[in-house]
Image 1: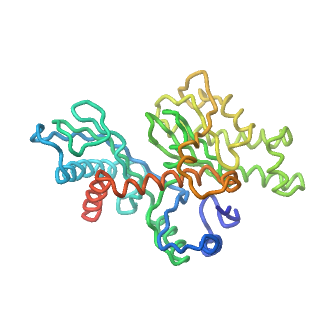
Image 2: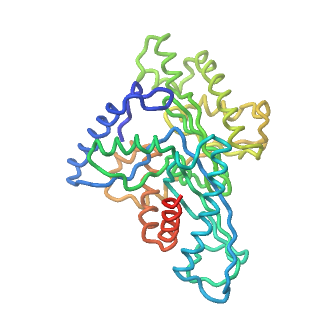
Image 3: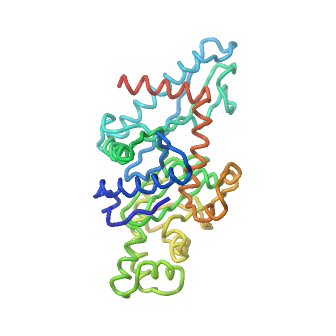
Length: 362
């Protein structure tokens, strides 16, 4: 991992693509030399400014419920399901954001739940039954952002194999079925809502921990590294109070919009550059949610990630390197492992095939 110079960004967006591409190319070229390997395709978890999630439910009634579902029928089921999902998604995305489907790229699609005749199951293939209910997740980003990432990777002379959204992958590291993940970055904050064990919504606002650091650097005459080390102490109480007032307003409005009048989970996970600071933990625990018309249980909790599953699969990484890895890196490792297994899974193959046909025809 290499943290990027914040001067390359403005309001959460890259304003110096060439400089960013040079920085990333430099560190990745060094990594290839260090590991004595050369790769042609890249799996990345680049954090996009806009990420749109669409969850849809479909119901398929089979003509011959006594026969097993073979590969051909599985493809037909997914083709019909994705057609329904994409129609709903195109309608919703235009209504909510004023965007047309032609302006977006689908970067991830998943079957998050399967029921056959009312019973939950992990598989459809080789099963019998009449009624197949699916819950499908599609994640999209604007084509302009996809092109930006593509340009960065091409600058290095590589191709994109897979894009894994940070917001989706990070949710897998928290075992709680319902949690709000508050990822406080340098110049923005990302809220990820996890309900029923899946990521259902993502939203961001342009206030990050560097707004506080910049304020302190101007008035305290200290370096940013000194300020970062002291943020967890009781110092700078006045500046912290001023920052949390601004950050809190943006947090409350964004969370209310994200929940869309549904009950807010009692669990909160705070991560990122700023999320590890206790003053933000206190801000969440004592936040006036009612002032933003947010319904929430009276008892609230700060929860932590569970990295046991990732660590179990990590091989060839030294402990000293593991200690310096961010949660985003853990999330990328775990989701990459899932993607590799998904590539050879018959459900993944059929779903991708159906989506590709519908997307190219659209």
